[in-house]
Length: 158
Image (cartoon, rainbow, N blue to C red; front, side, top):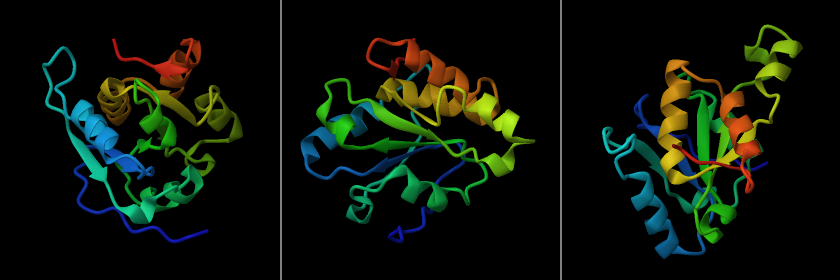
């Protein structure tokens, strides 16, 4: 497994978005513009920390999670991967940072990851997911379930 750079400078209120696909800069600009749009009916300013470094090209969740796990305030990381760049709605891959070790027992972990440890969300959904997970208002499993209920398997913020 390769060594990825340490993520620095992220404010605890910023969603973390890691770019792993570097084939289309124009699409990346579209994705970042969508992520920086005000959210929550325009009531909230978008707060995003972008990792845009070719050292992360084609990085997998298994490679990224150990790097971001040092950030105690991070409940979810979002990847702008090949699917993000090639799908019209630009769904990012949301990955929980929760580990078995952080849970009371295996049953607790299994319940919290009942619908998986990953799901896709539109750029508009990134802020909703990040904000609610950060304050403990909703759990990752709830968003994963909503994504699973979508015909395309994507969480779409209301």
